[in-house]
Image (cartoon, rainbow, N blue to C red; front, top):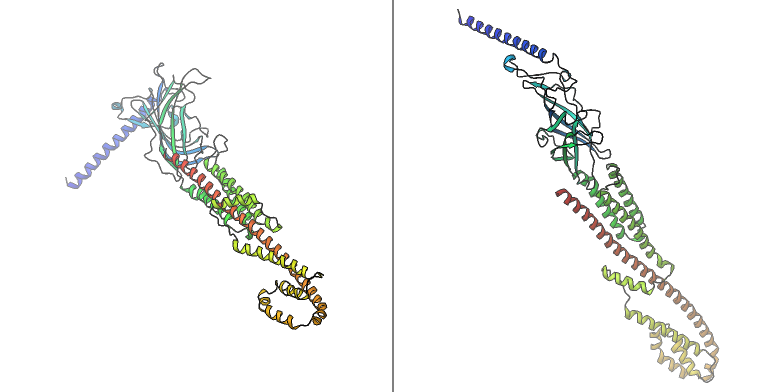
Length: 503
Protein backbone atom coordinates (compact mmCIF):
# COMPACT_ATOMS: atom_id res chain seq x y z
CA UNK A 1 0.00 0.00 0.00
CA UNK A 2 1.42 3.30 -1.06
CA UNK A 3 1.99 6.19 1.40
CA UNK A 4 -0.64 8.25 -0.34
CA UNK A 5 -3.24 5.54 0.20
CA UNK A 6 -2.30 5.24 3.85
CA UNK A 7 -2.68 8.99 4.31
CA UNK A 8 -6.13 8.98 2.74
CA UNK A 9 -7.14 6.02 4.89
CA UNK A 10 -6.06 7.90 8.06
CA UNK A 11 -8.07 10.98 7.11
CA UNK A 12 -11.12 8.81 6.57
CA UNK A 13 -10.81 7.17 9.98
CA UNK A 14 -10.43 10.54 11.75
CA UNK A 15 -13.41 11.98 9.90
CA UNK A 16 -15.54 8.98 10.73
CA UNK A 17 -14.61 9.14 14.40
CA UNK A 18 -15.31 12.88 14.60
CA UNK A 19 -18.65 12.49 12.84
CA UNK A 20 -19.73 9.68 15.10
CA UNK A 21 -18.60 11.75 18.15
CA UNK A 22 -20.57 14.77 17.07
CA UNK A 23 -23.64 12.68 16.37
CA UNK A 24 -23.26 11.01 19.72
CA UNK A 25 -22.87 14.33 21.48
CA UNK A 26 -25.89 15.73 19.70
CA UNK A 27 -27.83 12.65 20.60
CA UNK A 28 -26.70 12.92 24.21
CA UNK A 29 -27.67 16.64 24.36
CA UNK A 30 -31.07 15.85 22.91
CA UNK A 31 -31.58 13.07 25.42
CA UNK A 32 -30.36 15.33 28.23
CA UNK A 33 -32.72 18.15 27.28
CA UNK A 34 -35.62 15.73 26.99
CA UNK A 35 -34.91 14.32 30.41
CA UNK A 36 -34.39 17.68 32.10
CA UNK A 37 -37.39 19.48 30.65
CA UNK A 38 -39.79 16.53 30.72
CA UNK A 39 -41.73 17.75 33.76
CA UNK A 40 -40.16 21.22 34.05
CA UNK A 41 -42.31 24.34 34.49
CA UNK A 42 -40.66 27.61 33.53
CA UNK A 43 -43.24 29.79 35.28
CA UNK A 44 -42.86 28.16 38.70
CA UNK A 45 -40.02 28.78 41.08
CA UNK A 46 -37.85 25.62 41.21
CA UNK A 47 -38.10 24.35 44.77
CA UNK A 48 -36.50 21.13 46.01
CA UNK A 49 -36.43 22.09 49.69
CA UNK A 50 -39.39 24.14 50.78
CA UNK A 51 -37.54 25.59 53.75
CA UNK A 52 -34.63 27.16 51.82
CA UNK A 53 -34.97 30.10 49.40
CA UNK A 54 -33.32 30.35 46.02
CA UNK A 55 -30.10 32.35 46.27
CA UNK A 56 -29.73 34.78 43.38
CA UNK A 57 -26.52 36.68 42.94
CA UNK A 58 -26.44 39.84 40.84
CA UNK A 59 -23.58 41.81 39.42
CA UNK A 60 -23.28 44.72 37.03
CA UNK A 61 -20.57 45.95 34.69
CA UNK A 62 -20.92 49.64 33.85
CA UNK A 63 -20.08 50.16 30.22
CA UNK A 64 -20.87 53.81 29.54
CA UNK A 65 -22.69 56.85 30.94
CA UNK A 66 -24.99 57.79 28.08
CA UNK A 67 -26.72 60.81 29.54
CA UNK A 68 -27.76 62.49 32.78
CA UNK A 69 -30.80 64.64 32.27
CA UNK A 70 -30.64 67.15 35.14
CA UNK A 71 -34.04 68.81 34.61
CA UNK A 72 -35.85 65.42 34.45
CA UNK A 73 -33.39 63.75 36.87
CA UNK A 74 -33.02 60.61 34.72
CA UNK A 75 -29.77 58.79 34.04
CA UNK A 76 -29.13 56.45 31.10
CA UNK A 77 -26.42 53.80 31.46
CA UNK A 78 -25.14 51.13 29.13
CA UNK A 79 -24.47 48.14 31.40
CA UNK A 80 -24.03 44.39 31.45
CA UNK A 81 -26.25 42.52 33.92
CA UNK A 82 -24.89 39.30 35.41
CA UNK A 83 -27.22 36.85 37.18
CA UNK A 84 -26.25 33.67 39.02
CA UNK A 85 -28.59 31.18 40.70
CA UNK A 86 -28.98 27.43 41.21
CA UNK A 87 -31.83 25.45 39.72
CA UNK A 88 -32.15 22.12 41.52
CA UNK A 89 -34.12 20.67 38.59
CA UNK A 90 -31.26 21.30 36.17
CA UNK A 91 -28.69 18.79 37.42
CA UNK A 92 -27.16 15.82 35.61
CA UNK A 93 -24.13 13.57 35.51
CA UNK A 94 -21.71 15.20 33.09
CA UNK A 95 -19.69 11.97 32.72
CA UNK A 96 -22.79 10.09 31.67
CA UNK A 97 -23.78 12.46 28.92
CA UNK A 98 -20.39 13.91 28.17
CA UNK A 99 -21.82 17.42 28.42
CA UNK A 100 -20.75 19.94 31.07
CA UNK A 101 -23.11 22.77 30.14
CA UNK A 102 -25.45 23.91 27.42
CA UNK A 103 -27.33 27.09 26.41
CA UNK A 104 -31.10 27.32 26.14
CA UNK A 105 -33.51 30.10 25.13
CA UNK A 106 -34.84 32.44 27.79
CA UNK A 107 -38.34 30.97 27.74
CA UNK A 108 -37.09 27.41 28.36
CA UNK A 109 -35.86 27.97 31.90
CA UNK A 110 -37.05 29.76 35.00
CA UNK A 111 -35.47 33.22 35.38
CA UNK A 112 -35.87 35.32 38.54
CA UNK A 113 -37.96 38.44 38.15
CA UNK A 114 -35.13 40.87 38.89
CA UNK A 115 -36.44 44.41 38.71
CA UNK A 116 -34.81 47.82 38.81
CA UNK A 117 -37.01 49.61 41.34
CA UNK A 118 -36.52 53.13 39.92
CA UNK A 119 -36.62 52.01 36.32
CA UNK A 120 -38.17 54.52 33.91
CA UNK A 121 -39.08 51.78 31.43
CA UNK A 122 -41.49 48.97 32.17
CA UNK A 123 -38.72 46.36 32.41
CA UNK A 124 -35.02 45.84 31.86
CA UNK A 125 -34.25 46.01 28.17
CA UNK A 126 -32.74 42.79 26.85
CA UNK A 127 -33.89 40.62 29.74
CA UNK A 128 -35.93 38.34 27.46
CA UNK A 129 -33.74 38.60 24.37
CA UNK A 130 -30.70 36.52 25.33
CA UNK A 131 -29.90 32.95 26.43
CA UNK A 132 -28.82 31.66 29.84
CA UNK A 133 -26.19 28.93 30.25
CA UNK A 134 -26.95 25.84 32.43
CA UNK A 135 -24.22 23.77 34.09
CA UNK A 136 -24.30 20.20 35.32
CA UNK A 137 -24.36 21.19 39.01
CA UNK A 138 -27.60 23.11 38.45
CA UNK A 139 -26.03 26.58 38.41
CA UNK A 140 -27.47 28.98 35.84
CA UNK A 141 -25.51 31.92 34.45
CA UNK A 142 -27.38 34.63 32.62
CA UNK A 143 -25.45 37.60 31.23
CA UNK A 144 -27.10 40.17 28.99
CA UNK A 145 -26.44 43.79 27.95
CA UNK A 146 -29.01 46.46 28.65
CA UNK A 147 -29.63 50.20 28.70
CA UNK A 148 -30.74 51.30 32.15
CA UNK A 149 -32.97 54.36 32.45
CA UNK A 150 -33.30 55.10 36.13
CA UNK A 151 -34.38 57.95 38.33
CA UNK A 152 -31.48 59.81 39.88
CA UNK A 153 -31.83 62.64 42.36
CA UNK A 154 -29.52 65.40 41.20
CA UNK A 155 -27.93 67.88 43.57
CA UNK A 156 -26.65 70.86 41.58
CA UNK A 157 -25.55 73.01 44.50
CA UNK A 158 -21.92 73.06 43.35
CA UNK A 159 -22.57 73.00 39.60
CA UNK A 160 -20.35 72.71 37.53
CA UNK A 161 -18.08 71.22 40.22
CA UNK A 162 -20.82 68.90 41.46
CA UNK A 163 -20.67 65.22 42.35
CA UNK A 164 -23.67 62.98 41.81
CA UNK A 165 -24.62 59.66 43.37
CA UNK A 166 -27.20 57.66 41.44
CA UNK A 167 -28.77 54.68 43.18
CA UNK A 168 -29.48 51.51 41.15
CA UNK A 169 -31.64 49.26 43.33
CA UNK A 170 -32.30 45.72 42.09
CA UNK A 171 -34.58 43.19 43.70
CA UNK A 172 -37.39 40.70 43.15
CA UNK A 173 -40.81 42.27 42.80
CA UNK A 174 -42.91 39.15 43.37
CA UNK A 175 -40.86 37.03 45.76
CA UNK A 176 -39.93 37.98 49.29
CA UNK A 177 -36.73 37.12 51.10
CA UNK A 178 -38.08 33.80 52.34
CA UNK A 179 -38.50 32.61 48.74
CA UNK A 180 -35.71 34.42 46.90
CA UNK A 181 -32.61 35.76 48.56
CA UNK A 182 -30.74 38.51 46.68
CA UNK A 183 -27.02 39.16 47.14
CA UNK A 184 -24.17 40.62 45.13
CA UNK A 185 -21.48 38.84 43.18
CA UNK A 186 -18.84 41.28 44.44
CA UNK A 187 -18.64 44.35 46.63
CA UNK A 188 -18.62 46.76 43.70
CA UNK A 189 -19.51 46.98 40.05
CA UNK A 190 -17.10 46.04 37.30
CA UNK A 191 -15.47 49.08 35.62
CA UNK A 192 -12.83 47.24 33.61
CA UNK A 193 -14.69 47.79 30.32
CA UNK A 194 -15.88 51.32 31.08
CA UNK A 195 -15.75 53.83 28.24
CA UNK A 196 -14.77 57.30 29.43
CA UNK A 197 -17.46 59.96 29.23
CA UNK A 198 -16.81 63.46 27.93
CA UNK A 199 -18.76 65.02 30.80
CA UNK A 200 -18.65 62.60 33.72
CA UNK A 201 -15.89 60.76 35.55
CA UNK A 202 -17.01 57.63 37.40
CA UNK A 203 -15.05 57.35 40.64
CA UNK A 204 -16.55 54.16 42.10
CA UNK A 205 -19.67 51.98 42.12
CA UNK A 206 -19.92 50.26 45.54
CA UNK A 207 -22.57 47.62 46.23
CA UNK A 208 -24.70 47.43 49.37
CA UNK A 209 -27.19 44.67 50.26
CA UNK A 210 -30.29 45.86 52.05
CA UNK A 211 -33.17 44.05 53.72
CA UNK A 212 -36.29 46.18 53.81
CA UNK A 213 -39.70 45.75 55.39
CA UNK A 214 -42.67 47.44 53.79
CA UNK A 215 -45.99 48.36 55.35
CA UNK A 216 -47.89 46.16 52.94
CA UNK A 217 -46.11 42.92 53.79
CA UNK A 218 -44.52 41.49 56.95
CA UNK A 219 -41.88 39.46 55.03
CA UNK A 220 -38.40 40.87 54.40
CA UNK A 221 -37.47 42.02 50.92
CA UNK A 222 -33.74 41.94 50.22
CA UNK A 223 -32.25 44.01 47.43
CA UNK A 224 -28.88 44.79 45.92
CA UNK A 225 -28.14 48.50 45.52
CA UNK A 226 -25.28 49.95 43.48
CA UNK A 227 -24.27 53.54 44.17
CA UNK A 228 -22.90 55.10 41.00
CA UNK A 229 -20.60 57.92 42.12
CA UNK A 230 -19.75 60.44 39.41
CA UNK A 231 -17.86 63.71 39.23
CA UNK A 232 -18.57 66.28 36.54
CA UNK A 233 -15.78 67.56 34.30
CA UNK A 234 -16.15 71.36 34.69
CA UNK A 235 -13.90 72.68 31.90
CA UNK A 236 -16.70 73.08 29.34
CA UNK A 237 -18.91 75.05 31.72
CA UNK A 238 -16.02 77.17 32.99
CA UNK A 239 -15.12 78.24 29.46
CA UNK A 240 -18.70 78.81 28.30
CA UNK A 241 -20.49 80.11 31.40
CA UNK A 242 -18.27 81.22 34.28
CA UNK A 243 -15.47 83.03 32.47
CA UNK A 244 -17.83 84.93 30.09
CA UNK A 245 -19.80 86.06 33.14
CA UNK A 246 -16.60 87.31 34.78
CA UNK A 247 -15.62 89.14 31.61
CA UNK A 248 -19.04 90.76 31.31
CA UNK A 249 -18.87 91.85 34.95
CA UNK A 250 -15.45 93.33 34.21
CA UNK A 251 -16.91 95.23 31.26
CA UNK A 252 -19.42 96.73 33.69
CA UNK A 253 -16.47 98.40 35.44
CA UNK A 254 -15.78 100.36 32.26
CA UNK A 255 -19.03 102.22 32.79
CA UNK A 256 -17.42 104.07 35.70
CA UNK A 257 -14.39 105.00 33.60
CA UNK A 258 -16.46 106.21 30.64
CA UNK A 259 -16.86 110.04 30.70
CA UNK A 260 -20.40 111.24 31.47
CA UNK A 261 -20.39 113.54 28.44
CA UNK A 262 -20.19 110.52 26.12
CA UNK A 263 -23.86 109.70 26.82
CA UNK A 264 -23.26 105.92 26.79
CA UNK A 265 -22.77 105.13 30.48
CA UNK A 266 -26.32 103.95 31.18
CA UNK A 267 -26.55 102.13 27.82
CA UNK A 268 -23.40 100.16 28.59
CA UNK A 269 -24.66 99.07 32.02
CA UNK A 270 -28.06 98.02 30.65
CA UNK A 271 -26.36 95.99 27.88
CA UNK A 272 -24.26 94.18 30.48
CA UNK A 273 -27.36 93.51 32.57
CA UNK A 274 -29.18 91.96 29.60
CA UNK A 275 -26.15 89.78 28.79
CA UNK A 276 -26.08 88.41 32.33
CA UNK A 277 -29.82 87.72 32.15
CA UNK A 278 -29.24 85.61 29.03
CA UNK A 279 -26.50 83.61 30.78
CA UNK A 280 -28.77 83.02 33.78
CA UNK A 281 -31.47 81.67 31.45
CA UNK A 282 -28.95 79.26 29.90
CA UNK A 283 -27.96 77.98 33.35
CA UNK A 284 -31.57 77.63 34.52
CA UNK A 285 -32.41 75.47 31.49
CA UNK A 286 -29.84 72.87 32.55
CA UNK A 287 -30.90 72.80 36.20
CA UNK A 288 -33.76 70.78 37.73
CA UNK A 289 -36.73 72.93 38.76
CA UNK A 290 -36.21 72.42 42.48
CA UNK A 291 -36.52 74.85 45.35
CA UNK A 292 -34.60 72.64 47.79
CA UNK A 293 -31.18 73.53 46.45
CA UNK A 294 -30.06 76.44 44.30
CA UNK A 295 -26.70 76.19 42.51
CA UNK A 296 -23.92 78.49 43.57
CA UNK A 297 -23.42 79.47 39.97
CA UNK A 298 -27.00 80.71 39.94
CA UNK A 299 -26.25 82.72 43.08
CA UNK A 300 -23.12 83.99 41.34
CA UNK A 301 -25.10 85.17 38.29
CA UNK A 302 -27.77 86.67 40.53
CA UNK A 303 -25.16 88.61 42.51
CA UNK A 304 -23.60 89.76 39.26
CA UNK A 305 -26.98 90.95 37.97
CA UNK A 306 -27.71 92.68 41.27
CA UNK A 307 -24.32 94.37 41.20
CA UNK A 308 -24.76 95.49 37.59
CA UNK A 309 -28.24 96.80 38.46
CA UNK A 310 -26.64 98.76 41.29
CA UNK A 311 -24.07 100.05 38.82
CA UNK A 312 -26.93 101.42 36.68
CA UNK A 313 -28.23 103.25 39.75
CA UNK A 314 -24.73 104.48 40.56
CA UNK A 315 -24.32 105.73 36.99
CA UNK A 316 -27.57 107.69 37.25
CA UNK A 317 -26.32 109.27 40.49
CA UNK A 318 -23.04 110.23 38.81
CA UNK A 319 -24.82 111.76 35.82
CA UNK A 320 -27.11 113.69 38.15
CA UNK A 321 -24.12 115.17 39.96
CA UNK A 322 -22.30 115.87 36.71
CA UNK A 323 -25.09 117.98 35.21
CA UNK A 324 -26.38 119.50 38.45
CA UNK A 325 -24.12 122.56 38.22
CA UNK A 326 -25.61 123.69 34.90
CA UNK A 327 -28.62 125.06 36.80
CA UNK A 328 -26.37 127.43 38.79
CA UNK A 329 -26.87 125.67 42.09
CA UNK A 330 -23.84 125.94 44.34
CA UNK A 331 -22.34 123.00 46.18
CA UNK A 332 -23.32 123.02 49.86
CA UNK A 333 -20.51 123.34 52.36
CA UNK A 334 -21.18 119.97 54.02
CA UNK A 335 -20.99 118.22 50.63
CA UNK A 336 -17.67 119.89 49.97
CA UNK A 337 -16.35 118.53 53.26
CA UNK A 338 -17.71 115.04 52.59
CA UNK A 339 -16.35 114.84 49.07
CA UNK A 340 -13.04 116.31 50.14
CA UNK A 341 -12.75 113.40 52.59
CA UNK A 342 -13.79 110.88 49.90
CA UNK A 343 -11.29 112.38 47.46
CA UNK A 344 -8.52 111.81 49.99
CA UNK A 345 -9.56 108.16 50.43
CA UNK A 346 -9.74 107.34 46.69
CA UNK A 347 -6.59 109.37 45.88
CA UNK A 348 -8.41 111.90 43.72
CA UNK A 349 -6.70 115.31 43.33
CA UNK A 350 -9.03 118.32 43.37
CA UNK A 351 -7.86 121.33 41.33
CA UNK A 352 -7.87 124.40 43.64
CA UNK A 353 -7.45 127.98 42.38
CA UNK A 354 -4.29 129.81 43.41
CA UNK A 355 -4.89 131.64 46.68
CA UNK A 356 -2.68 134.60 45.64
CA UNK A 357 -4.63 135.01 42.40
CA UNK A 358 -7.89 134.86 44.32
CA UNK A 359 -6.73 137.53 46.80
CA UNK A 360 -5.51 139.84 44.01
CA UNK A 361 -8.83 139.48 42.23
CA UNK A 362 -10.75 140.43 45.36
CA UNK A 363 -8.38 143.40 45.91
CA UNK A 364 -8.91 144.65 42.36
CA UNK A 365 -12.66 144.40 42.84
CA UNK A 366 -12.41 146.48 46.04
CA UNK A 367 -10.15 149.06 44.40
CA UNK A 368 -12.47 149.40 41.42
CA UNK A 369 -15.43 149.85 43.73
CA UNK A 370 -13.55 152.54 45.70
CA UNK A 371 -12.50 154.37 42.54
CA UNK A 372 -16.05 154.43 41.23
CA UNK A 373 -17.32 155.94 44.46
CA UNK A 374 -14.52 158.53 44.38
CA UNK A 375 -15.39 159.41 40.79
CA UNK A 376 -19.02 159.92 41.71
CA UNK A 377 -17.91 162.14 44.60
CA UNK A 378 -15.67 164.13 42.23
CA UNK A 379 -18.51 164.96 39.89
CA UNK A 380 -20.83 166.16 42.65
CA UNK A 381 -21.56 169.86 43.15
CA UNK A 382 -19.06 170.52 45.93
CA UNK A 383 -18.58 174.26 46.35
CA UNK A 384 -15.50 174.21 48.60
CA UNK A 385 -13.40 172.13 46.17
CA UNK A 386 -11.14 174.12 43.93
CA UNK A 387 -11.03 173.71 40.17
CA UNK A 388 -7.48 172.49 40.46
CA UNK A 389 -8.53 169.66 42.86
CA UNK A 390 -11.50 168.73 40.62
CA UNK A 391 -9.26 168.25 37.63
CA UNK A 392 -6.69 166.40 39.77
CA UNK A 393 -9.36 164.01 41.12
CA UNK A 394 -10.80 163.59 37.67
CA UNK A 395 -7.47 162.63 36.13
CA UNK A 396 -6.46 160.58 39.14
CA UNK A 397 -9.70 158.72 39.80
CA UNK A 398 -11.73 158.94 36.62
CA UNK A 399 -9.15 157.18 34.42
CA UNK A 400 -7.46 155.03 37.02
CA UNK A 401 -9.50 152.02 36.05
CA UNK A 402 -8.71 152.45 32.34
CA UNK A 403 -4.95 152.75 32.20
CA UNK A 404 -3.12 153.29 35.46
CA UNK A 405 0.30 153.18 33.80
CA UNK A 406 -0.60 155.80 31.21
CA UNK A 407 -2.08 158.13 33.87
CA UNK A 408 1.09 157.79 35.93
CA UNK A 409 3.33 158.65 32.98
CA UNK A 410 1.33 161.74 32.07
CA UNK A 411 0.71 163.02 35.60
CA UNK A 412 3.52 165.61 35.49
CA UNK A 413 2.45 166.84 32.06
CA UNK A 414 -1.08 167.39 33.36
CA UNK A 415 0.19 169.46 36.29
CA UNK A 416 2.28 171.64 33.99
CA UNK A 417 -0.73 172.07 31.69
CA UNK A 418 -2.88 173.19 34.61
CA UNK A 419 -0.37 175.91 35.58
CA UNK A 420 -0.30 177.29 32.04
CA UNK A 421 -4.12 177.41 31.72
CA UNK A 422 -5.65 180.66 32.94
CA UNK A 423 -8.71 180.65 35.22
CA UNK A 424 -11.05 181.90 32.54
CA UNK A 425 -10.14 178.98 30.29
CA UNK A 426 -10.84 176.58 33.11
CA UNK A 427 -14.22 178.11 33.76
CA UNK A 428 -15.09 177.95 30.06
CA UNK A 429 -14.03 174.32 29.85
CA UNK A 430 -16.09 173.18 32.86
CA UNK A 431 -19.09 172.50 30.66
CA UNK A 432 -16.98 170.39 28.30
CA UNK A 433 -15.56 168.55 31.26
CA UNK A 434 -19.05 167.70 32.50
CA UNK A 435 -19.90 166.15 29.14
CA UNK A 436 -16.73 164.10 29.21
CA UNK A 437 -17.49 163.00 32.75
CA UNK A 438 -21.00 161.92 31.80
CA UNK A 439 -19.65 159.95 28.83
CA UNK A 440 -17.07 158.27 31.02
CA UNK A 441 -19.73 157.46 33.62
CA UNK A 442 -21.82 155.76 30.94
CA UNK A 443 -18.79 153.75 29.80
CA UNK A 444 -18.03 152.79 33.37
CA UNK A 445 -21.61 151.66 33.85
CA UNK A 446 -21.39 149.49 30.71
CA UNK A 447 -18.06 148.06 31.84
CA UNK A 448 -19.58 147.34 35.25
CA UNK A 449 -22.46 145.42 33.63
CA UNK A 450 -20.00 143.46 31.51
CA UNK A 451 -17.97 142.69 34.61
CA UNK A 452 -21.09 141.48 36.41
CA UNK A 453 -22.02 139.20 33.50
CA UNK A 454 -18.49 137.82 33.36
CA UNK A 455 -18.53 137.33 37.10
CA UNK A 456 -21.80 135.40 36.89
CA UNK A 457 -20.43 133.24 34.09
CA UNK A 458 -17.26 132.64 36.02
CA UNK A 459 -19.26 131.73 39.12
CA UNK A 460 -21.45 129.37 37.07
CA UNK A 461 -18.38 127.75 35.48
CA UNK A 462 -16.81 127.28 38.90
CA UNK A 463 -20.04 125.70 40.18
CA UNK A 464 -20.20 123.37 37.18
CA UNK A 465 -16.58 122.37 37.72
CA UNK A 466 -17.25 121.65 41.40
CA UNK A 467 -20.25 119.41 40.62
CA UNK A 468 -18.31 117.64 37.87
CA UNK A 469 -15.42 117.06 40.28
CA UNK A 470 -17.91 115.54 42.73
CA UNK A 471 -19.24 113.30 39.95
CA UNK A 472 -15.70 112.15 39.17
CA UNK A 473 -15.10 111.39 42.84
CA UNK A 474 -18.31 109.34 42.97
CA UNK A 475 -17.25 107.49 39.80
CA UNK A 476 -13.95 106.62 41.46
CA UNK A 477 -15.69 105.49 44.67
CA UNK A 478 -18.20 103.34 42.77
CA UNK A 479 -15.44 101.83 40.61
CA UNK A 480 -13.45 100.76 43.66
CA UNK A 481 -16.59 99.43 45.37
CA UNK A 482 -17.72 97.49 42.27
CA UNK A 483 -14.26 96.02 41.70
CA UNK A 484 -13.87 94.89 45.31
CA UNK A 485 -17.31 93.32 45.52
CA UNK A 486 -16.89 91.56 42.15
CA UNK A 487 -13.52 90.19 43.20
CA UNK A 488 -14.84 89.00 46.58
CA UNK A 489 -17.89 87.11 45.32
CA UNK A 490 -15.96 85.65 42.34
CA UNK A 491 -13.23 84.43 44.67
CA UNK A 492 -15.82 83.04 47.08
CA UNK A 493 -17.54 81.10 44.30
CA UNK A 494 -14.29 79.65 42.97
CA UNK A 495 -13.00 78.74 46.43
CA UNK A 496 -16.23 76.97 47.41
CA UNK A 497 -16.22 75.07 44.14
CA UNK A 498 -12.53 74.18 44.52
CA UNK A 499 -13.02 72.88 48.06
CA UNK A 500 -16.03 70.84 46.96
CA UNK A 501 -14.04 69.43 44.04
CA UNK A 502 -11.25 68.28 46.39
CA UNK A 503 -13.53 66.69 49.01
